[in-house]
Image (tube, rainbow, N blue to C red):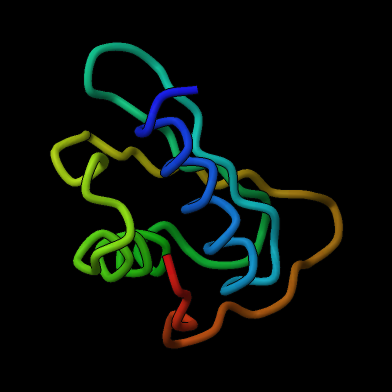
Length: 90
């Protein structure tokens, strides 16, 4: 597994912990990755969480990637999204 893939997996786990919903980062092609989740935060909230996480020291290999957000909906409402990301050590 490459450093970028490892960082993407760790970022997905951090976002899962922060939001309370499962978040996965999936590679598409070139420099494009998808952040996908069901319910929970809005796309704008997730973009803010991604920006905050990428501004820190834990994910340097993902900073120059294009991260597209994709929110799916289930039949049941999900938990509300937190307003600030949790601090996570690299």
